[in-house]
Length: 180
Ligand code: G3D
Ligand code: MG
Image (cartoon, rainbow, N blue to C red):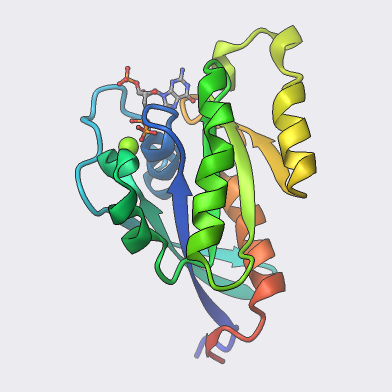
């Protein structure tokens, strides 16, 4: 019998439309990237099991889908969430500016100060000298959050997002054992 500890976390992936939320989730859960799938419609989540050290982490990863704009639906997604992944597109500064209100909304809907992580996606579209991301680093610093730069397209740093957020969840919720 598997005697390793098991933990379950609900993770929500939020941010403006088109930043690559669905692509990151697909890349992580199926290791695939599809340039042609349609915008996510309605409720959608994937389940993935991660092993960190000796721990089994069950992640339900919620994709906020095409409902990004509708505030009332957000609360349904946020309900019971353990952590949020805040995604912006490194080629779209407006999507970075929006993260402030995404983060504020998520925190407002959370009972405790849940862990979050900032993800700058689509770095395959940047030249090397554009990778500095000063504004994002400042935002990350202001909120005491980690920034991870990714490419769902090239599968760069995608797993790292989920490992890091799982570690933050473990730190915060180390009593959330469902089976020992
Ligand atoms: P969303 O779920 O946040 O709305 P999607 O975003 O995952 O639907 O992605 C929006 C568009 O960005 C898609 O292109 C997708 O292929 C593209 N995309 C996602 N991640 C990356 C990335 O890392 N690099 C690049 N170059 N493109 C990415 P289309 O053309 O279908 O709109
Ligand atoms: Mg989507």
